[in-house]
Structure formats: C-alpha cells, structure tokens
Amino acid sequence: MTSDEAMWAGVVPDASRRLLIAAVDSFAELGYHGTSTRQIAAGAGMSAGALYVHYRTKADLLYRIAELVHESVLAALRDALADVHGPTARVRALMYAFACWHARHHRAARVIQNELGALEAGPARTIAGMRRRVRAVLHEEIQAGVAAGVFDVADVAGTGRALASLAIDVCRWYRPEGAASPEEIGALYAHLAVRMLRPGRDG
Amino acid sequence: MTSDEAMWAGVVPDASRRLLIAAVDSFAELGYHGTSTRQIAAGAGMSAGALYVHYRTKADLLYRIAELVHESVLAALRDALADVHGPTARVRALMYAFACWHARHHRAARVIQNELGALEAGPARTIAGMRRRVRAVLHEEIQAGVAAGVFDVADVAGTGRALASLAIDVCRWYRPEGAASPEEIGALYAHLAVRMLRPGRDG
Image (tube, rainbow over all chains, first blue to last red; front, side, top):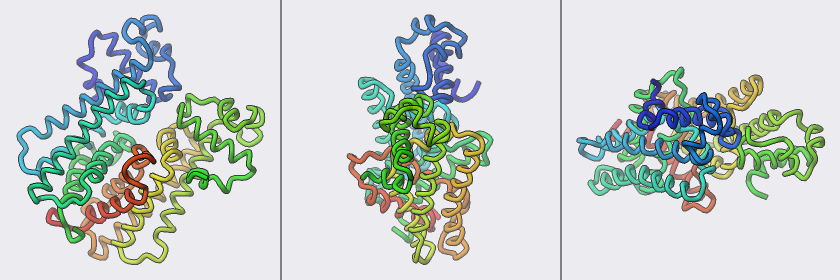
C-alpha cells in the first residue's frame, strides 16, 4: 500500500475508493480538463455508467479528493502538535510534519494544487476554508512565539504564508528516487523555519 | 502591456507572439492536455492551419514558452547580481529578484511549473539544463558565503533547493489583488533567506 492509498483507506465502498485512486492517476497524467469520466472508470476497471452510481460528475471526484487531502493534512498537523510544548518545539514539529506529508503524498497533493481552480463555487469555498485552517495552525504558533518573546517576526502573516508555501511546494519537486527522504526534508525544513523565526545576527 | 507580454516582446513575427500568448491563456485555463491547437489558434484570431506555419505542434508551443520563461528568470537573476558585492547582499538581491519575478510573471510561470511533465524528451532535457543553471546561481552564492565564513549552512544543496522552491511557489499563490505587492514579497523573502543562512541563536 502506497502512502496515498493509505489516505483513501477509509473510503467505502471499495468501488468508490478505486474510482478516487483512478481519478488521481488520470488527473496526474492528463490534467483535470484533459481527463474524461470514461477514462477514470476504465482506470478503475468499471464502466462509465457504474461511475455515476458513486459520483455525479468529474467535478464531484475532484472535490472528494480535495476534501480527503486537506483532512489528511489537518490531521497530520494536529497529531504533530500533540504533547509538544514551547513555541520553538511546536513550530519545529509542525514544519517537520507539514513538509513530510507533502513529500509522502506528493502525487495527490500535486493534483490538488494544480487543479484547485477547477472546483465549482460551493466546493471551492469549502476547500478554501480548510486551507485557511491549515494556514491558521501555523499562524497561531508563530503568533504565540512572538507573544512569548521567543520569535522575532515583523510580518507574521507573510512569514506564515512563506512557511506554508515552502512545505506545500515539496509536492512539486519531490521525487521518491531523489537524494532526500521525506524525513530528511522534514528535518531540514524544521531547522530552516526556526531560523526564519528566531532573531539572528540579521534580526 | 502586462508584465507577461513584456516577456514575449522579442518574439517575431507578430503572429508567433500572439500564438504564444494565446497558448499561455488556454494552458492556464484548461491545462496543456485539455487544450487543442484549434483553441489556441482561435485565441490568437487565426485558423488552425495558420498556427502550423509558426509551430509544428502544441508541444512546440509549450517548449518555446518554457524557453522564454527560463531565459527571463536567468536574466533577472543575472541582472540582480550586477555590481552587488558581499555574500549577504548578493543573496538578498537574488532572492528579491527571484520572488519578485515569480509574482510578476505568476501566470506564465504557473503554466510552466504545472505542465513541465508534458514536454517531449529532447526539450525536457534542454529545460532541465536551464533549471539547473537557475539553481546553480543560488547554490554558488550560498557556497561563497559559507567559504567566506558569513553563512552557516550544514546542507548547502538542500538549503539552496529550499530557497528556490520558496521563490518559485510564489507563482502558485500570488494574486495581483492580494495584500502584498511583488516588491513587498521580494523584500520579505530576501530577509527570510538571509535569516536561513546566517547563524542565529538556533545556529
């Protein structure tokens, strides 16, 4: 089981799950607009008619994938903070988990980053809300560190955005055959994040 | 003239240039695989037959766009370093230019980041070479700062990759109507880059 498959493990029935996995495969290869529901169904070994039992439209599939991806990120960040105390340790744990997640789930994450614009208005609002929650987790930890006098950050919003961006972009360039493992990338990014937040000679 | 149009200004004849601009528009909206040459030609107010006078295939258009985009980035980085001395000032100038460029040219940059996988083997090698040169510019400046004892960097390759990634990802999230201007993003990222490289309390 690949790590992406682990993300879909809770989806039932089995046919719904296979269609999600086939959709990620097709979107990754041909883009959302370049993929037909017929291709997705074929990828799952099903007929186009059988697909519509589980998903009304191709847009429905994209929305469900986006929802699962963002639920998974939020859970990873929440888990990373459990029982971790102190601003530096918490940002370190967050950034490690955030970057690691985007290496491990680079394929599904990339599809979603590339195709967010194809979501319909209602779903787009829901996903935008989930993305705001992700950014808020980082923002709150930076803010807490500033309030505690541990971090020195002139632009909390911009710096939080930069940290999120750095972790998210791992899904664009990460390759499993590359030099660094998800854990090594996570450790480096945790280190760089703390450097960005704590005053140095440049602070 | 938008900043993207400025990037194509040297392309002649006029019809070739209009086709490039129309291709970026279509790829941005529908993805590379979701776009037909007929749509691109129509976007430029031309017939599909007239398109083939200028570009053999849709893949040719993508390649030409990727080439112009990467030539523009490399020129921006080269210009940023002219007459700037000292590792800190040079990294600051580089990061400012790199992030600014990706905000100003976010649309064309996004198309290229999303669609690099669609390039054919030969063109993909050429573009990969240009991308290595972009990363090498950053890498060399970090290396020089370490050699001069100004920077404290355990993982030069990984840190250089992170700085490039941070600047490139601006094209994904930047919106002209957003709170920060390209210049403000450039200034923040120059500051964050120097923080990552110079030893602080965490160093």
